[in-house]
Length: 92
Image 1 (cartoon, one colour):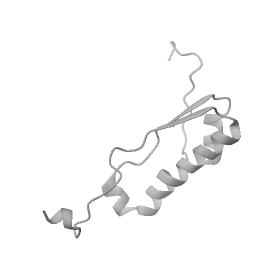
Image 2 (cartoon, helix red, strand yellow):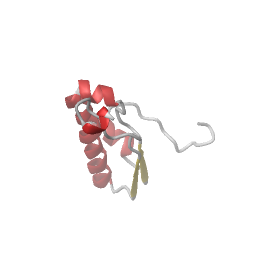
Image 3 (spheres, helix red, strand yellow):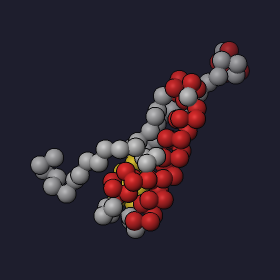
């Protein structure tokens, strides 16, 4: 990190507006990489994973807009869908 004196790591949850604000304030660009990428976990805990993956992303975007951020770069988990055991593709 010594090579990047303007970089600051802020730990917190993206669903926490205060943490998002602390992480985003003063930024020109925001790189949003936070997610719960586990498909099995999303099947076991859909409310929590939706709250983080969807609600948290909305929180980051709204906070960035309110802070006047020029650009948000967001990366999503590589696999966004699950094959349910009862679906036709799972029986092949």
